[in-house]
Each structure stands twice: as structure tokens, then as C-alpha cells.
Amino acid sequence: MSTTRAIRRFTGDSIPTEDLAQILFAASRAPSGSNRQPWRMLILRDGPKAVAAKRLLGEAFRAAWSAKRAVDGYDRGSGIVEDTPKARTARAMQHFVDHFEQTPVVILACLKRYRAANPGEGSSVYPAVQNLLVAARVLGYGGVITGWHAEVEPELRELLGVPPDVAIHATIPLGRPMGSHGPVRRRPLQELVYEDAWGEAATWAVDPPGTAYTQAGPPRATPPPAPA
Amino acid sequence: MSTTRAIRRFTGDSIPTEDLAQILFAASRAPSGSNRQPWRMLILRDGPKAVAAKRLLGEAFRAAWSAKRAVDGYDRGSGIVEDTPKARTARAMQHFVDHFEQTPVVILACLKRYRAANPGEGSSVYPAVQNLLVAARVLGYGGVITGWHAEVEPELRELLGVPPDVAIHATIPLGRPMGSHGPVRRRPLQELVYEDAWGEAATWAVDPPGTAYTQAGPPRATPPPAPA
Image (cartoon, rainbow over all chains, first blue to last red; front, top):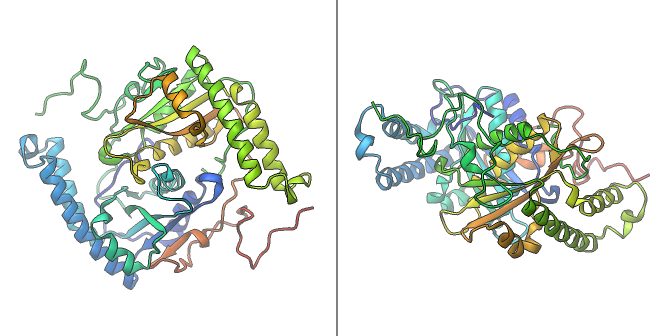
């Protein structure tokens, strides 16, 4: 878990079906409401529809990243200074969307709804998604949870025959990472965990020594190092 | 993962804060949209508000189980035959809700909303919840994802000071399991995984030998054994 980070650059290696089966078995061990297991994983590899779907998704991902790049200011401030975290993220994202069609495996995490759409329904699909990502990491693969299929969802549903009562909850590209997995960076646990009441510190909830933080953390008392 | 099942019967053992910190650190390794980490875990142990909250939740859980017991027919058919799966489930659930107040740790998995409530928002909280449950299992603890706080949510929010823009996405009782973890039972992978299009079999997606299935599976060609 502690080295399972978002992976967006893949080598050309495919994923053997034996490994995929193991990864999906891990997903299937996850809990779901009343053990209904309403999630379904739709695997896109090299089949005729898979290739067409990857093309559609590639367009959607390029459009979504292009919009995010502008909105989040990746071409301003430290985004235009070489080797800042912002610039590195922008480069990785651009590579990701430009090569989307070459992603070895794309998984659509779907939910067969048995109730009207509601904010809690993810409890029966994302635990399986997280097991999938951790199991992939164990076997040396990586991926990332995205929602960028939204841009082309009507066309995608028609192409793949996804019924109206099924929600596509995530698009997960999966493959062998190019380069290393790198550290997972998060906020300090002290910001994420409360005890006894909202906002009350859980003093014992501390990260192990050497934990790497996001720029969002650690708290302001300890400012992040200035960019070089 | 393969032995992380829902646990609803706990010994009286408390969970040392060192273990809780490890479990929450694992949760914090999970991904979230744009790495915003909008989830917060509110831990209820033995503080004054925690005790009051457990009492409120205990009432809510007993009411919710009582309703489910009636609606799902746990007191009809095989539910009244001793030692059928249905009867065993009913007994475990009754024990669970009757002893809720003694649960060593109750965790409220919350989401600080940064967008209007939507069906996909669980992608930023349930991956952390699943990491938490798997990490708890590694240390010999167990728990279960429930949504039964709903019954008393207004009172609970007031007691704990949970702000209006925060959703309570799950209530997770956690403790040392009474008895064994038992097998995880799910549907056969063939029912959960498709390839290239909705409903198309992924022939390679097969469970390892010896996998235990729910009564919902395996498919009808192999009926489950008749109750004794």
C-alpha cells in the first residue's frame, strides 16, 4: 500500500491473463453492501471494441487534460520553471494522454445500480478498485483512478453496450510502470484524523519517521522547501 | 485481502494507539481525486463524546437491523432452521447490534465536500476505507463498512460537531474478532468480469482452485448444497 501510487507512464509490456486474473480475484475479495457485489469490471485489451474504446477514451483524456491544464494554471508560475513538481506533473500528464491508446489494459469499473443513484453507492465499487490497484502493485504493475471517460460517455456506452442502469464509476489504465513507482506523498495524518469530535486532534495519529508529504502538507508551521 | 471479511463480533480487547496509527497510515496511502485527500476519519474510543455517540449509534443499528430482519425475511423459511447460513447471519447480526456500545473503536469515514454531492464522490473516501480494513486485518483486527448511522445522523452530527459540508460516508466498527475470520465468499469471477463489451465473458478470469462462493454463486449449473 505504501508504494502504490498513481502510475501514468507505461512500458509497452502487456499484462499476461494469469496476472490479470489474480488482480481481479483480489478485487473480488472486497466488501460490498449486503455482499451484493454489484460491481462489474469491463476489461479493454486488444479486442475490436477495446481498440475503438481506447481511441474514444484517448480523445476524452486529451480534452480533459487540456481543460485541467488551463484551469489549474499548469502553464503559469512554477509550471513554467523546469523540474518543479508542477512542471513534472504537467509533463507526465501530457505523456499519459498522448499515449493513452497504447495503454496495455484499460478497466472500466462499473456498478449495476439496485437503487437510485446516490453519493454512497461508491461503497460497493471503490473497495474493489482499491484492492485491484494494490494487487496490481504487488505484481509490479500500476494504474490510476480517473473519471475522464465522462467526456465521451454516451458514445462509449453505445460502443460497449453498457445498459442504462449501469454506472461507469472509474476508468483505470493499467500497465508496467516506466521508471520507478516513486514515493506516495500525502498530508500528515494529523490533518486527516480526528478523535472524539470533529476537528479534535488524535495526538497518537502520527506518520512513521521518514514519511514524504505533499506540498499541501506538512502544516504551515513547517513550510515546504522552496523550489530550486 | 483474501481473508479480510466483514467482522461483527468483537472480544473486549481494545486497540492500542500504535496499531490504530498504523491502520490509519495505511488509509492515508490511498489515492483520491487530484490527491486532494478530502476524507477525514473521526475516531470514537472512550472519550465523553465517543461514549455518547456509540450509544446513539447502538440505537440506530438496532433499529436498522430490526427493519432489515423483517424486510429480508430472516424469521421465515431457512431463517428459522437452525444452522442455515440465514439463521447464522441473523444470530451474528443480532449479537452485533446488541453489543454495539462495547465495540472498541468506531470510525466515521467522512468526506469534506468540495463539489456538490454526486455518485462518484466515494472515489475519494472508500479507497482509504478499504486500505484501513486490509491493514486492520494484517494486525489481527476486523470490522465492517456500514451506513446505519443514517437513522440518527442529525443528532450524531450535532453531538460531534460535524459541519454541513461534510458527508458521513461510513460507520466502521473495529476490534479483535471473536472466533476466526472465516472464508470470504463471493460470486465466481466469471460473473463479475467482462471483456471487450458488456456481458462478454473474459474466459481467462477464473478463481483459484478451492475458492469459496456465496450462495448467489456459483452459477446455476452447480447448485449450492441443500441445507442440512
